Length: 471
Image 1 (cartoon, rainbow, N blue to C red):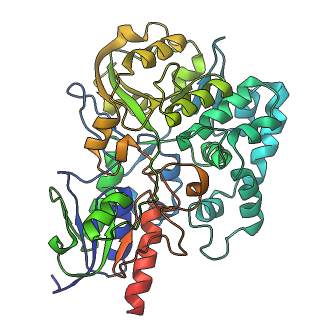
Image 2 (image 1 turned 90 degrees about the vertical axis):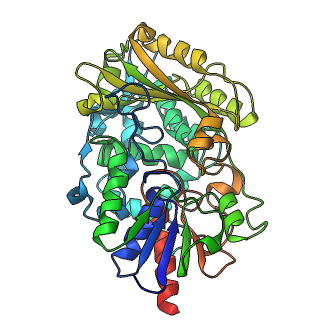
Image 3 (image 1 turned 120 degrees about the horizontal axis):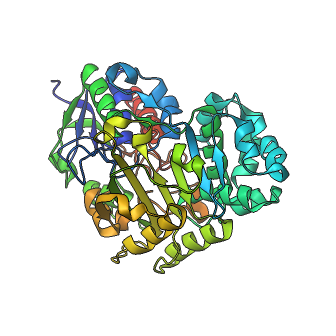
C-alpha cells in the first residue's frame, strides 16, 4: 500500500461506492470505510421477518439504477448485477377496481388513463422517448455543470420539471391521470403542489417507458455487492465495521469523500456551522411483510405490477404528504408499495411472497402507523391481513438508527422544498467541495439528490480527480 492514499471514502452506500469505483478505475489508490458490518447504505437486502424471506429495508425498485450513466459505464453485470423486469412497472388502482398503469408501451399506459387523457399523456412524454441517455446525463447532474448534451430537450424538460405535479397534471381532464401523476410526484416526499415535483413525476414516467422499473435479482444488496466487487478488482480496499468519528482517525490521504449527511460531515471534519442552514424533510413508516400468497388486489393490473401506488386521487395524495411535512399524524396515508417476488421468486420460499409498503409521517414521529397503513391496503386488497405471516416495522427512529444518513428518518437526506430542490447542500459552483480543500461530500444531500443511481458519487469523484490532477 502506498504511504499516502489518493482518496479515502467514508460510507459505503451506492454513492460512496460509486465514487470509490470511479477513482479506483482511474488508477487512484482508494480505501473505503463503512460503519456497518456490510456495504450497502440504502441498498441492502436482509432477512427481516422469517428465514428465506429476503427484504430490502430501504430502496427496492430501481428505475434510475438501470438508467444510471454511472452504473452503465461499469461492468456491473460481470460482478453479479442482473436486472429483472416485472410485467408492469406500476399500477395505480382506483376504488372501482380499475387501475392506471405504466409499462414499456406508451400506448398501453396512455389508454389506461381513459380516452379523455390518452392523447394528452402521449403528447407530454413523446418528445423525450428514445432520448433517455442524454436526458439522464443532463438531468442527473448539477444544473450549472457545463452545457447540456441535448439543450433543446434539457430546456423543454426544465420548463416541465420546475412546475408542481398538480400544475403539470392540469393538462389532464380525468381523475385517473391526475392521480397517477400525483403519485409519481410524491416520490419527492413533499407535497405535490410544491415546485419541482412535476420533474420527479415526469422523470419516473419516462423511465418506465424507456428503462422499466426493475428489481435486482436477489435484492438491492446485489447493486452494492457488484460495486464493491468492482472496486476490489480495481485495487481498492473496503473496511467494514469501522465507524469514523473524527478526520484524524483516517489514514493520510490527498482527498476525503463523505457519503454522509451534511450534519455528520460537519461534525467529523470539524466544519462547524457550514451546513447549519440545511433542512431535513418528512419521514416514512415502512412495513416489510412475509406473505403466504400474492396480495389479493381488486384491480387485476396490480397483481402484475412490481410497484403499486395506493391513494387514488391527487387531492388525497397531496393531503397525505402535506400532513407529514406539517407534522400531523397520518390518517389516510398515500402508500408506495412493491412486490419484488413477482419478478424474482428467489426472494421468498416457493408460493410465498415478500411485500413492503410505506406511508409518510413527520420527521422523528414515534407513533405506530401499522393500522392506518393496513386499513388503506385493505381498501384495495380485501383480505390482505389474512396473508400476513410476519411483519417488520420501521418508523422514523428505527430508520434513523439503521442508517445514520436518514436524519430524523428522512430517507431522502434533505427536504425537497424551496431552493433546496435545486441547490443542495448549499449554494456553490461545485456542491461536492467543502470549506476544507481536501474534504468532499457525495451523499444524496448533493445533486442530483436521492435515488440509487450513484450519480452524486460520480460527480463528486469527478471533482476529486480534477483537484488531484491539479495538485
